[in-house]
Image (cartoon, rainbow, N blue to C red; front, top):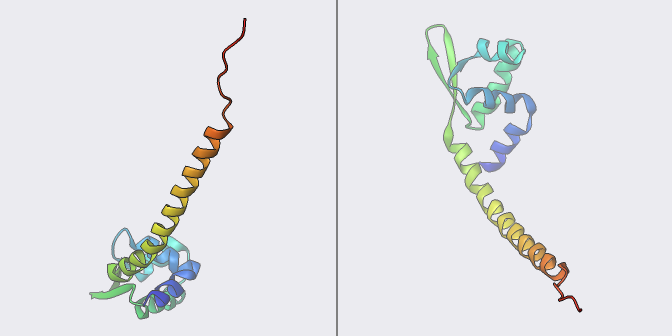
Length: 114
């Protein structure tokens, strides 16, 4: 599922659609207007996002509203958390090394002789 999510989000227009849907459900025409894309393009991208499980569609009268599904993004966040912990640990080690080198390179205070 993570691979499908990442593949779907890798395409810039689909990423922009997901960013737009953070504000709430949107009909296809509104998405197209806001992103300056024609309806068939938007529908194509929304189909990919739906197949990847990133969006749901809800019919409302003559419109179809698309909204984000949180689960795939939460799974992606959990997967990324492992890497964040790894990098946090490495940055902490780097901070410690920089502090140690800074202490070693600071001039020691010497008393002046008279």
